[in-house]
Length: 188
Length: 172
Image (cartoon, rainbow over all chains, first blue to last red; front, side, top):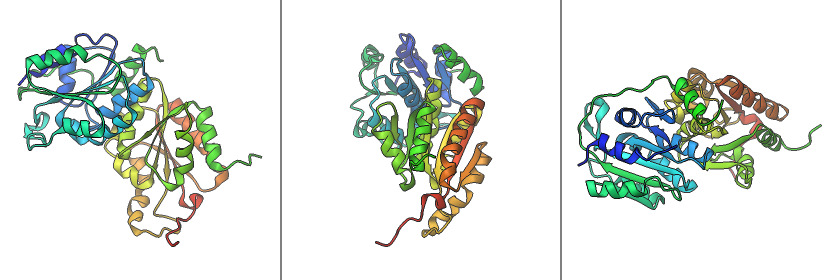
């Protein structure tokens, strides 16, 4: 199993001008820790909404790579979003699920993944054909090569360990975050 | 005097207000708007699996600078409750057109509980709510909702009453 901050660091290090939307909990802290940017939108709530928020940005700005970084529990709560993404097939959307098979924020209770559900299979079955699960350092290296390619929606589920690295907490002010991200995209 | 249908007038106002994305779940009362959006190359139409998907999608679209709107039935408002905290926390402009069930001449009692609470639920979640009873009010009310939402960074819902939409026929 891979270490989550290492995974996020490797996959986002060449993000350039990408917009990153983070699912609440550890993915928000991970992105704040290793890839802080005015082009990040950090969710602290709205559980189940990260993929759809990323889809909204991606459809509005097809020239920008949009990356959703979220956890398995958050992605499971918004599972229907994978079907919706598949119908729109945005070329510029990448969904990264950091899968520790648990709900870390609430005390490490098991998620459906731990009980046998294949979420990557769900993404594939919905019609996101570029969907893969990453388990090893070699597979992570391969995933990094194509991670920022534009052309079709991508779903990357990475098996990470149960560790909880130190919390790095970005702004919890959703208005401030909205204004700063829009400004970074040239919007007033 | 505008002789086009109220649905066409609403669509014209959506277009002139530069709404570029419409997220929806089907409802008979929204069918003309949905059909218009689907054949309009300048509108991004997004079929949702549940209404709550529309809230973060519209917020995301606004982060990217695009105006959007949601179409749903009154029962779908209940599916959005927790997700509406995103609208309120981020003061995202948002417009929802809601076709009402569970009121005027309703046949199906299962529509009554949520239909009876739709306006209060939206208001509890911080939305401003306008209600349309007559066809002549529809386009002006939708226009006011769009202006209100995008000028004041708030959520506005327009409830299209069952009386306006007409009775649903249950017997062939």
